[in-house]
Amino acid sequence: MPSLPDFTDRDWQASRTDAELAHSILGGKGQLMLPMRDKLSREDAERVVGYVRAFGGGEQVVPTEAAVPVVLPAA
Image 1 (cartoon, rainbow, N blue to C red):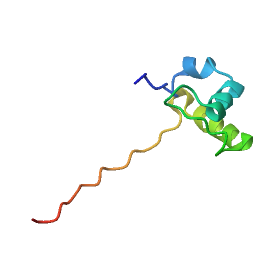
Image 2: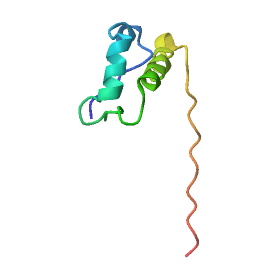
Image 3: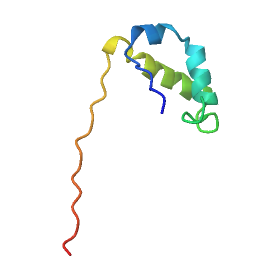
Image 4: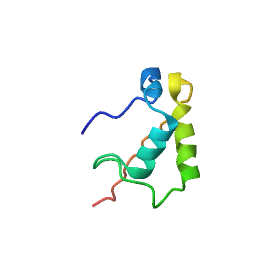
């Protein structure tokens, strides 16, 4: 699996325009990033671009959820 981009990396952020990001979101990229054009409008894609841009420089953090333990029924 190829490495995923680091959205906090200022160089990565600067290397792509908003239009390029929206194009990738709507059109997909390779086999791992499927096209979203049938699920998102152009405006929705622009909102996703804004969300990705908010990570630039490490300004935005998404907290991870605590793992929920799996409890198996007694045999």
